[in-house]
Length: 143
Image (cartoon, rainbow, N blue to C red; front, top):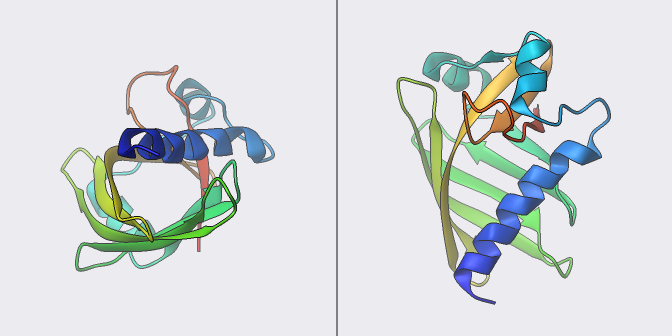
């Protein structure tokens, strides 16, 4: 399967998680209207770095750990139910935009994207935009 299809598939898995969680917001507008606030770079670092961040994708659970040294690790379940490992790195800018670049193993496929994190009460959400209210808002768990 070409890299672009794998990368698109992973993104769809993350987006689909929004529909699999009870009480999940469908879009960023719902999160913001419910009192959700975007995490700043410092809030992201204090609330998520060093912890498991994950959710439920189309094929099963996924998780990532943003390590303090900028490394990224994690796992997900592939389309055929096979386990995939994630290894790469992450950055966060002053606007709170978290960008990741990683390789899926065992096939050594690469992906890169940026995400904003929001917090509404005790629930976290991820969205590819911090201003497009129609953009999907994906519930994530932080442990």
